[in-house]
Amino acid sequence: MKENKLYPTIDNSPGESGVWWHEQNLGPLENLPFLTQFGSMKFSKVRLDENMRPHLNDGIEIHFIESGKYDWRIEEKNVELFPDDLSITAPWHWNGSPSGKMDMGQINWLIIKPHEYAPDQPLNFGNWTSISEQYQIKLGKLIAAENGIILRKAKLFKKHILALKEELLLQAPGYELVVRNIIENLLIDLYRHLSTRKKKIGQEDCFISKLTEMINDDLTEKWIVEDLAYSFGMGKTKFTDEVKRLTGYPPSSFIIHLKIERAKQLLTSAEELGLSDIAYQCGFSSLQHFTSAFRQRTGTTPSKYQQNSYVSNV
Image 1 (tube, rainbow, N blue to C red):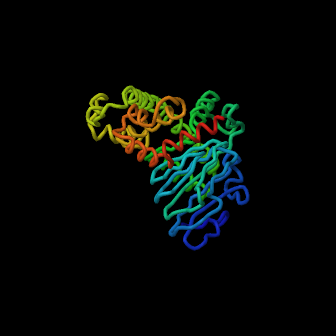
Image 2 (cartoon, rainbow, N blue to C red):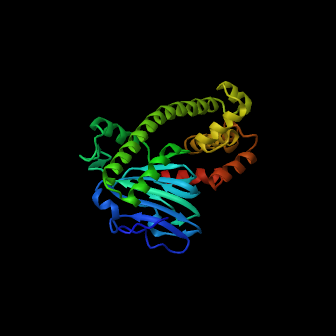
Image 3 (tube, helix red, strand yellow):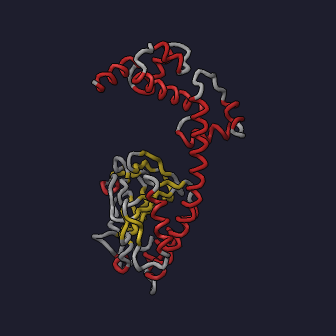
């Protein structure tokens, strides 16, 4: 990467190269007060970076993975970021690498500082942008609606990130105006993508709700994946992929998860039922099977779970 004479790249350590402009090293951001950080780092070996641990900041933080795989934490959720993935967090969302470990690969990020934005305040970027007030408010609501957003295979945004990096490195005459236009185009594409995503999430939530209700209606049923898939007009493979993507479990494990959740409810609310009765009502073939599955999922036995719940309620 060619080093800019006015604003050099960061003083790279062995195994890393790239740029990082921030409050203590503004560089080309000096004339762009709405952009408080921009970084593009390539790691050729695994390293620890305290700056990458979970943190808060004063703006909307966007990460784009160019290559490699990164373990990430957004609020209470651990995720893996892969090439072409995009993460978006609001100023009040904790995000970063749980351990500060940066694996081999390339990661890009920027922080756009709004004039106003909080859980109880609508998004207002200020007077630098021509994006309408209503558009900004709607975008703010979409970002705030989730505790951090991960967009998978978001190749659409790569062009904005690369164009932004090029303008900041070259700083040709008028680069400030070009950067503003790039940021606006990025935000418009983000709004369009999140609007479509919101509708899709609603459909996905409906799918999982219906599946959960169907299974919970009769946990003693020996559910067959092919039959469940047919009920939703899907083939077995697509159904399995969708359930795993949306719940984190393959169908058979999701069914066991629902059985365990029902068992927890009965263990804490149905004192008149014995463990064998609870095992039967939750669809386990035997008390031994119930105990084994319960311990595997919760780290304790049904009887100890029940005892602890009684003690905590006293």
